[in-house]
Length: 370
Image (cartoon, rainbow, N blue to C red; front, side, top):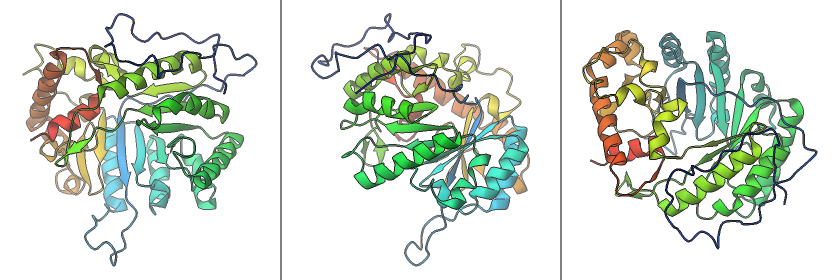
């Protein structure tokens, strides 16, 4: 197996000023990592993510006979009304996600509509439908396709992995920008070095590593296992030093103290200021909610998918009746969320030992803790 080193890439040491717990990783983490791969040309400039993002969960129409109680997807007209309002509020990118967006019948009209408004478009997919003609016809309207990868066989069935590999090669030949997304698990963390090399060799613009999903107890998220988080973090930092800037390595995991320094969490700077309570209200929703989520039922949720309903911004259908919905939220409901964010931050920064944190997952867990 080979690994990539870009001689021009800056090296990002894994936070040498931050005390790491002494987990017994020496026998598990690779110790013979190659650091010289010459003759490999850098890719084009990595895709630049935007700072104010709408996450739109696309739900294919349910079969009434087999799923009579499945939620009804919002209509195309409702979504267009919302997207116009979101653009005016300062959002500049739409991420189409869900079970499989390419099965969503209105994906094409929405991609063309968002592009005309000025949005950038991202689609998150499992990548198995990319060879279909109707999907390929949509690619010119997509700025980045993010493809979920479970890992090499046997972590992913051999037949689907072979088809995925063929589709990645076709995307690369066509010059379409794509990245790989992987949720790290106990079974997959040891394959992260392989995954990075696989992504780079197939022309990916970025590799997005998500930390392990927090386990649930009684329907509520619980604390994530810290040892697996540390493995993910350390290997992720190594991969950043080896592949950037040729291929971006996105890692949704930080030491607590570094969370406010991340561009996507820039809103925390004002939220956490000692004098922020009672300060002037923001004028646009995107100034304080850099991510706005539209769930399968049309609820507008702040910051992350799964945040408790008590923090809901509203519903798509409310925009026709209350065109000032966002202004009303900022005046009457944002202060409650602001105080919640301050409370969660205080909890995290007063831990007895330093921890690694996925901020959005932490918000979801705390908001649903009861």
